Image (cartoon, rainbow, N blue to C red; front, side, top):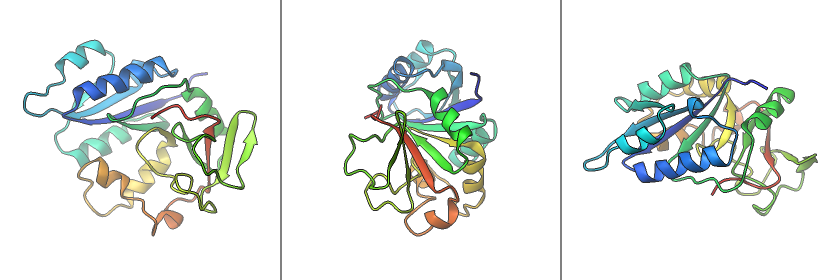
Length: 206
């Protein structure tokens, strides 16, 4: 099944960690190099040339203005977007295609997390199992990890939802921390209109 999905990855001065992210992502998922877009910022004596040679089909963008670069990458992204940071490593197989299939089937799903799973406890009491997928109402959840729907580690979102969130943001998005902070405890219920999240039985990243 063909889906238009983009994986936008942030890396600042950590080319070795980024290499581990890319290597594990491509080994433990159905992602392809041409789906991956890296926004990178080299530092003194820490360049990205070697890792770029290892992954020539990844789309590389040197950071100039983070907010503008980010908005442009999201604008050019596919129908679905997964964000990533260079401090994440994948260790179990997961399917992007499967995640997007569920997002297409269930319009109430805000995102499909590769980070969560029933081995991350405590789990929400109202969590429902659908074959090997877990679905829960994040607004009703009191459990840590499960009541926070927006993060940059490894969750697949609809591009339209991400565009709406950044369009409403008045502050300049200076870096990934600012980007993740556009949603917080005070505004998430009003800004995110889809009330459910989904994940695999077991998480796939660390």
